[in-house]
Length: 360
Image (cartoon, rainbow, N blue to C red; front, side, top):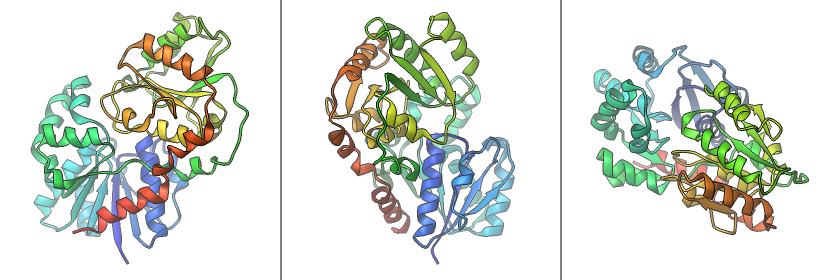
């Protein structure tokens, strides 16, 4: 039986975690023996969606920087052949462990963000300097890296010394939970949704300011924010300061995200940086148009102007507002929106992963 070990930091409610569980389940269905190793299961939501055939291992470690010994012991015990890793910090630790243990295993890293942009926006000195130094020195020593977008691939080659032959572009698959809603028709309501963590990366301040501007043209429009995060209290304060309490609603995390996509008129994304935003793909899969900043990578590879949404000038809240109003008022052709998402269907993406995993 073919074997694959998958390493990830957590199974909390994020896009990478959702993709991880989708891949683990599909690989197990296709005959792989899958071990999914997570640093911890604190606040986990996606572990409940794992197939029973997937062997879930909890290392019970709080942070990647403290996980070296636990990962080393796991690898010495289980002797993996191939490891698919969902975090560049964990990938670097695996490179170090492979060198120390002298065990022969392949490391395939799924890259999450555009690392050079992430580094520029980083506030933590630990990540901005020490982790970044290790990335520059060691990350290119993985066997292969899977970039979610063309822009991400170019960033890895230009800034981190990757051989272009070892970098593969594979977009994110739509999860099974989203695909179940494809035939589900909801009456569109007068609301816009934002799906994502309440974090600096997601540009919530830009989101709320652009929405405030948009209300001058569409006073009965509502914004529903689906997600949790460290900035929740700041977001609540911002909503109050902008006088948006009657039009902005915080929903928290939801396992029923397809319901929100299917009934919204528009999905909006205001991220400062992204790798490949799952939110946009999920929304167009269910026929809901999208509006997004033209962030350094990702959105421009997904959004087709007038077909499935609009791109706004990067970090320009006035333009984001204009595109939101335009999308909200437009009479969209749902069939065209859905058709633009077909290349992201689960079966197509999983086949690409298997091709990479099984190649020499």
